[in-house]
Length: 193
Image 1 (cartoon, one colour):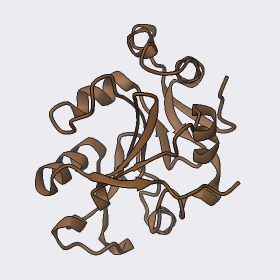
Image 2 (tube, one colour):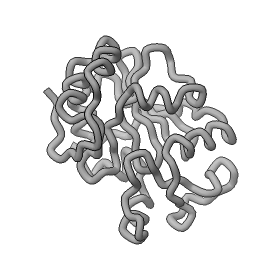
Image 3 (cartoon, helix red, strand yellow):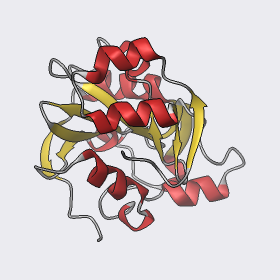
Image 4 (cartoon, rainbow, N blue to C red):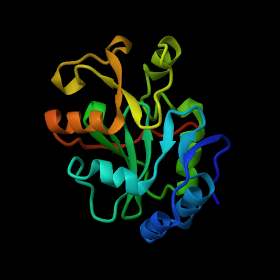
């Protein structure tokens, strides 16, 4: 069973939701939902989400493949999802989808997420830590994120002063509407071991 060393539960994930999605994901993921529910992982950059809530909020915005399950979001509006035995990360701000290396188990993905040294090179979180440390609002609330204004696809610059606090799902919808769906870029960079 995969458990996180640090996890702040925001809400439980109801058993009917776990039952609905259990056939699409590994037993480890269903165990995570039972054990932790939805909430902040470690330092809060990653958030384990209720898959039914995420599907509802992203319906009509993101065209996920059939039997896809949203697992995590980030403080920068990224989405990690599972489909057909693979994990993918949509980095809406850059308009890209990165594949987690083939054969990566959920336990290995969870370990990648927990390691602070992976934040920059693998998950491209800069300048997020600078913004969290310097702004009075600090870390975004569970369904909030920092997003570039204007969005990068519309000429925004990827600088800390251009990040503004916004609703997570609203920010994703704005990017999808204005810039279109992100495109496959390749594999995530190799994590630090």
